[in-house]
Image (cartoon, rainbow, N blue to C red; front, side):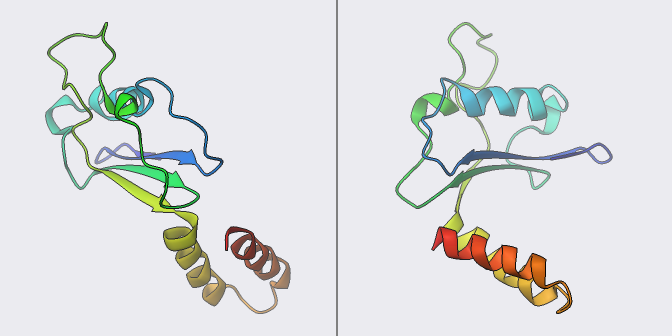
Length: 123
């Protein structure tokens, strides 16, 4: 998710299916979406966010996904210089969906039912 003025980016790596991390995956996303567009402010900054979305708290990003590819320039950071937030469906996403349910008009029962089923699926 990206905004141009002022430049801000949210990168969401969806691992809800427990997929393995690809080599340097999050680093490459960070480099392409954040660093290459704003080198001066690419470190920890409230304009940039990395979210690692998992099914449960058991999965964490692997060390290799956060590291600079070995054939890239040495002047780049060795690891992604942003904090990676771990979000999971049982906590952050379910809470957000519960909040959404309260905002949906009662007449929109189809959307309400869809969200309720999605919450039930992740519980």
